[in-house]
Amino acid sequence: MYQEGDLSDGRDMNKSSKMPLAKKRKAQAVASEIDMSEDQDELDPSLRTLAEDALADTIEVTAREDTALETPSKRGRGRPKGARNKRTPTPDGDIPPEERYFFQTRVGPANQQPTSTNSFSALGLLTHDEYLAESRKYKDPHELEMRYLLKLHGRAFPQWQFELDQDFSICLYGWGSKRQLVTNFAEYLCHQAAKKNAPHPKIVVINGYAHKLNVRHVLNTIATALHADPDEEDPAPVRLVGQPQDILDTLLTRLNNTPFRIHLLINSIDHVSSPFRTTANQALLARLSAHPMINTLMTCDTPTLNSIFPSNIRDQYSLLFHDATTFAAYDTETNVVDDVNELLGRKGRRVGGSQGVSFVLKSLPENARNLYRLLLSEILTILNDDETGGIPEPEDEFIDPSLLDATATPRKQNGRSQAAEDIGIEYRTLYQKASEEFICSSDMNFRFLLKEFHDHQMLTTRKDASGTEMLGVPLDRGEMENVLEELVL
Image (tube, rainbow, N blue to C red; front, top):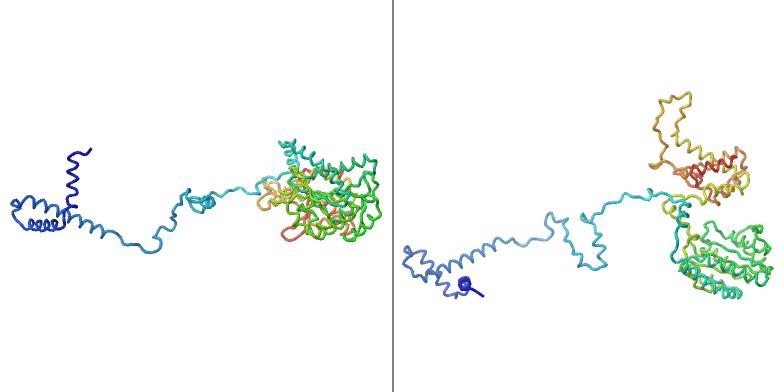
């Protein structure tokens, strides 16, 4: 509810705005007369009020004109000085979700993230023993379900056997390792033969994930199984010489004269290290599988099998595909330790360490053991020289012990001490010393012995900055001393 005083104030405020134009002009004329008059007390009071209102309007108009003159003119093009680094922040809620990541990670002082000082070189090497110890502790929460899934796949074994007997090949696909499933199928074939009092079936299992696998080894293994007695547990190996194509022709000729079928079971045929990813080896395996005395069952782990094998190769196999999803981990198919160390640019240790190397050396000839003993001796000598930094021992009668630096440290390479696995000996130096000790008589014999070490992952080769071939061992100092002690004794 308005008061009377408020209404009067409102009328006084709007009095000048509602005044007619003619009356305003008259009031301005009267105001000029008042300014010129000397006796202002004699004027009419109503004229004085009009004159005051006219003066108020004049003062308001003048103030508006002054304000308009003080308003700056429109600025020109371009950014003003000092506004180059200023950015107008975009509200986080006004941008679409697909652009929110780029807004939050945009480059700028406000979004500058500190750079981490961590590096891959600071990570410790993961040994096989540590990985195996941790993997044994892990218990899969779905182990019972996966075992039940294997039993369900086992119900299809009679169908698989029938399809193989009808000269078809089988390809098992699906997520998870199928190595255990293939092993169960091999046991099923043996049990079926035992029930019928038939000879033991000849089964050849090929692991496509093995890094050292080659076609010659596969063909020689099949030849060994072909000439072996069905009841013989450990047959003598058969070695066919020549090119893979010639070996296959010889093998196919012998298959024509045998009454036994050979079951060829291939695990992970599409593995990245499998030799059957090349076109030439695929053609050889397809010719072998097309023989009526060869029953081939293979497993694939990638969905790109059709792109790896051409259509004409698949037609020679006469493949039948079965879903064999197991959800099992690829523990055997993947070498976690070696893959991680290779990713970091390092070398992993051999499985078994010194015990595994000692076991392999017992099966090698005498000259091979002598060569490995010489290799370990030379590497340990280099390590001892590195520890003293090339400085003579204080016991030398020609050296004053006071001149030696008590804080001498091993020589460093790339800012860190050289580890035992990084030490190597030149190829020519080792060959010369081996010739002096009558370990090997020729370079060909020397290379053959080195190949034996390399196949058993007992030897590492690399080239230094000058391109010289260096030979080393994937063992630490303690393991090398243990192996050398066994060789000497």
